[in-house]
Amino acid sequence: MTVDAYIGLGSNLEQPAAQLARAVSELAGLPKSTLVAQSPFYASRPVGPQDQPDFVNGAVHLRTDLSAHELLDCLQAIEQAHGRERLRHWGPRTLDLDLLLFGQTTLNDARLTVPHAELANRDFVLQPLLDLAPELALPDGTTVAELRRDCPDNQLRKLPAQAHP
Image (tube, rainbow, N blue to C red; front, side):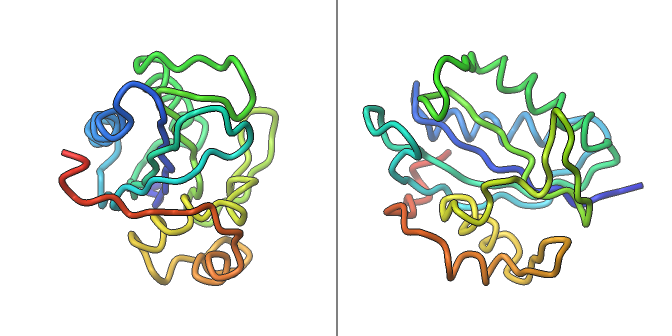
């Protein structure tokens, strides 16, 4: 069964915009999946420890026949290929790929929570989602636009298109 999945991308190490651009290409090549759209990239302050560089974030819309857990495995493999290390909670990273929404699925198990647990608190995720699908809603009917309107400000700045090849 084909599902519309939305993936959040983030990086603040080793040329973050280039990391995201490469990840988008890798996501486009996932098995049983088609890249539908890519959002612009945004810069924002880090969540958590402030002793690290600003992040570059974006989102993609995939249409996939993978299960949520199969897709998660693919995302984690891409992160590892980018040298992702989990040294500190909310710490710096070369690449972070989060499964934000998976169709109208609600899931909460030891490996995966969908919709993403922090979605409502992250303007750097909500704005790219709005760029991709202005009418997008969560399984409970809450729209991404509503969440964005009520979201705390993280000093989000849209990057020029040339900032991400």
